[in-house]
Length: 290
Image 1 (cartoon, rainbow, N blue to C red):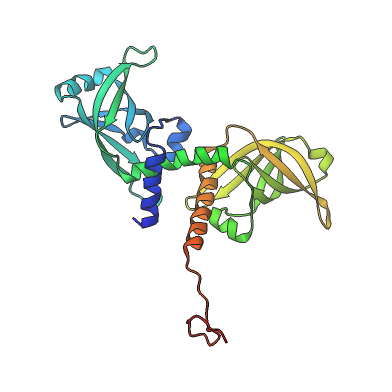
Image 2 (spheres, rainbow, N blue to C red):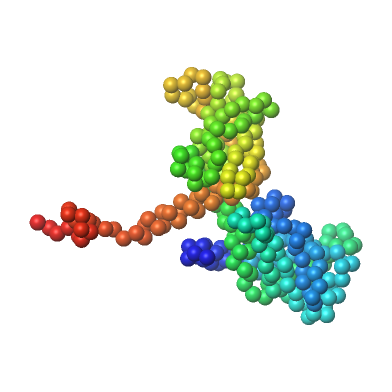
């Protein structure tokens, strides 16, 4: 693990230590959590469970009371391990690790007579892999609120950094397919060049597809054209500003946030580079005054 990544994980842990994340279906998918491979290990037995929420300090899980976990926890002085499993982008094999925990209580879940919610307090700092995965979700939520409308011009360099497969994309205007070109994007919107007449397309509901690589992902972003601009030298093309509707896919927000963080790290490295003044003869020594 590089120093930069270590610093990022330490920052996540310090900033988001007590924040609890409800693991909705979208969050689970964005995290790469393999829900069917989550277990509580207690007294040598594995009990399947559902992760309801988590922070860096604790997790809440849902278990069937008939599985006998509550009794086992009582016999084990409430000591257990939480087995977590995530998809790996780099490898085919999933990332699996255990978090040491202590049960601090349980209660019926909703109106169910069979399912209980168990709160597991972490007895030590969770693995760095978990801090990085959950911290990335939390960091994205913070930056979405702070940099929601900050535009990213899709130059060739920015397209590469964002891992957008092509500036050319598919657009549906009230379910009618059209081709378009992406000019810039943000957390909450995009500017798109479309073939057509502005007055016939303004204020229309639209759906935009954006394809990313590494890993390959396609996001459907629904929204509305809110204003138009003339494309210089082309009377047949119009540039539209599109505002995305909520909910915006978490996976898309993660992609935008990764770009901003990459830029921040690059700027920080540039600021830390020592200034060098080369001599006229190219020796690398500071040039001397006449």
